[in-house]
Image (cartoon, rainbow, N blue to C red):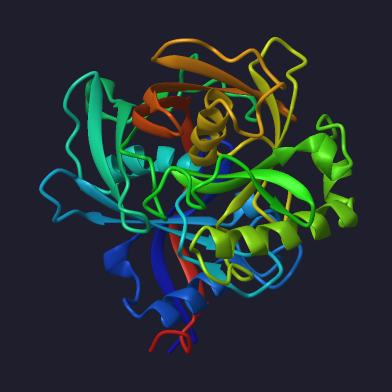
Length: 362
């Protein structure tokens, strides 16, 4: 009898992230056992994830877990796990918009959803946050199409477009647009905006953190003083936002604004939070866009704020830009985001079985 247990999986890139995708029915229900299994599968605990399928970066250690939904509205439940690279930890508190782009194609590939024609709409519920999404997947001839002409910055080549619509995204974790009740808060003498749209974020000005905001990912990851300052503020902001002790949680995320340089609306350096994101997270891009649209926030003076709704915000990042469309209503200091849209792509990279020690799950 082998001492390795085989678990079916698909290995997929979603947006600018990647990781193994599982059926919930193929995994243990117990959260601690599940975490141990995912740590083993990804190879968490080593900077290169050498003993697993992770890629040594937080964008390559993401895990979607899918199941049919019992929700009256949704087709699919999407449970997301962020496996840490070097710390043997799994955070189940957040969701991921880039890996959300794998959910539609994977649901069809796994037999959960039947293709409907040239395109197939998949209604998705986030188990982590309760958020709802609609994914529109290209399905000509009854098969998922991965090749196409859509390009997203941070991914080489072109692929079939996947349109993601985010529904009722305000207060995803905290129940409030402004969890602290303020447009700006001050921690350690530095002003930030704490906001919750799809993902709770702490947002500051790059110049207030001693950087230009145009550095590369490598330059930022080498700046230990920057990360120490952000983490101190993030821990205090987490408490003020009602999230409690966030020292072992990836929520809230962190973003730093600077004026756009290449024709966009705003330039962003985004943190996950203990590594610099190579581009920008799809979920948090909506929070960053909402902050850019809201007068009185940290974004004042850094951009020419678009008028009217819906609005298109072009967020510049280290490898290009991401476009976010927001249908919103702003009343005083409160924003109602009716929906937000982004365009992503995805690709199935491999399919088969992943092996973990039988001792993990007996």
